[in-house]
Image (cartoon, rainbow, N blue to C red; front, side, top):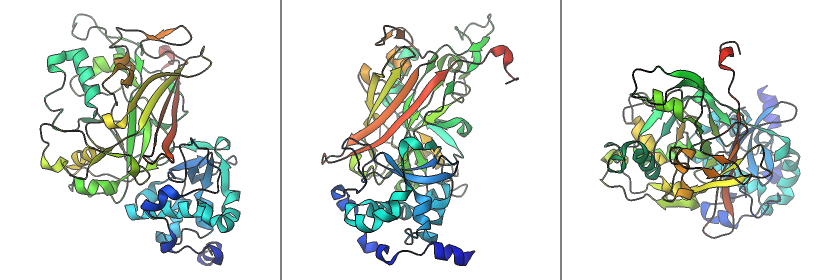
Length: 458
């Protein structure tokens, strides 16, 4: 078997890749691909995001996105073209990205640069005949979760969002809780209900109580009436696991963020309102979280870095590093009801509105020695700007249900109705203006709640 594998991984002498041939970060902006990439594509050769797809025959493969195509990395590894990677890139023949993500950052960078080298026009004569049979039109494959998500933690890292929610429920003078400006607040979510884009979202049932202070009236049970979105991004952990008891320093956190996805942390506001005191969100958040299928690496996002916002009061030293940054990615949320012929924009925001970085989230999460594993997911929390059109939830857009949101079909919304489809997009044109780095779409459509009388029989 070893001999057969060795023969299958023999590289065509014309396609031997030397490390000195690979593009550097400074050279990436010049690259052009022999794969046709539309000018406004989220997936130029400067991106190369990783994901997992299912072919028509049911086989599951790791791939990268280039323009409107998916490149099968199982076949690239079988051709011996990842010879520069540890174990010749055999981890890219897996059905999930976890093994690849568990290598160090230099391996992720090397793999991405090899793929860019193979897809660049300068190597078309040798690489194109080898790789073209393993390119699939994106619409002909089914996207899956990119990795096994062992743990998922959601944060609350947008000051604008936290302030808005605080004003609604505690008043302007007490909007932020005393701890908020000192640490990234978070709660432990459910990895089992994280789903990939285009998975339908079932309206949850639960305990409901209009006045949570009224002890004389018991709660009722039924479908959530105040179903909401949360416009977020998620960050995947990569690299070696830290041993229990060993924190990850913020200066080392950069080497442990594999990449970023779009995220919609669906929320049942009425269920959450009754249950969250004193321990925080539970059933109001655990029923579904949707992520986009392509993980955009932090290397690809390098051109979109911005300095951290001013953080006052000064944070404790374990959360501070002069190299830390946030990202400049434009985000949009669109809605399409059953009666609408096209999607309607409901809000636009940007990741620069995050007060805390993903590195600060990771440093704080592990300061107690909490262990992380490749594939663990951190959610940013709802990302809202300062203007109403930048609010990242219907809770804010309707101001706790006091204001109507007008839709193009003549209907209105305060929260989501059955049949509503929500699409989140995210992208940004690089500073040199020559290419866009994007994430594609994060989609979900609301299905009616199950009949409460059938619960337990489904």
